[in-house]
Image (cartoon, rainbow over all chains, first blue to last red; front, side, top):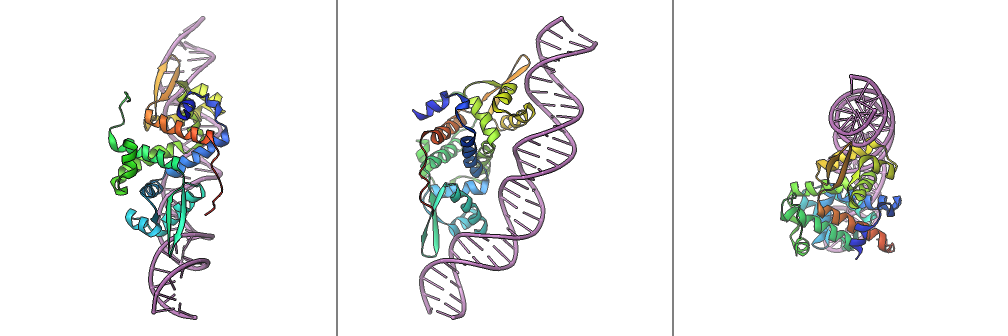
Length: 115
Length: 115
DNA sequence: CACACATATGAATATATGTTCATGTGTAAC
DNA sequence: GTTACACATGAACATATATTCATATGTGTG
């Protein structure tokens, strides 16, 4: 499968521009505020104001972050009346984030034996 | 499964400090040089100098990055003679990175719907 | 011991970036 | 039209950070 091939592949197989593209995704998830915004969208479409209040952030800041996330195609927007709802755009990202969340939530990190 | 529970959970279930912890992991993967270093370690233990040459980076820079990665427990080090070998410390991270690499390598995502 | 090699570390710097504030744009109702 | 609401946007700033350079630490060899 894809995962195994990625693990087995030669490191040089990843071109620089793809590494940069990958890093850009991780970088966007690397800010606490932005990450929490993304996690919010995991549960379904959310309006900007709702996120702002739920996360204790200013609507302006949330909007700024969503702009970056949308530009990177991590989220997509849909207007409904006066509000704009954002949801996860890329299923793969949803999986990665949810996987990481599960990892942090479940057990302590220093387990060496895996399933 | 853990993934499903993470997807289904209420967003507020993730405490702020855990969000910060998560973001810290993503942030470390969010730099191209650092990400390429991590990807190098996916294929097995690698010495600092070897990575530096393979990636076209200065040994000093690689060492600086490895210091951060090791502090965050993303990689672990083992001394063998004069060289120090680094490898992935957390299998979960290996999975996430490999998953993302596979995602970028496999198919091009459709870049159509601009908001 | 000295010497060469491999890596680590600290300082300095240029750049990137998250956040705030003020203002602009779009939408619905009156 | 105007008013109120929801969100976007640009500037400004303070902080963070990636990289380079010089220097230090550790390790094996003669």
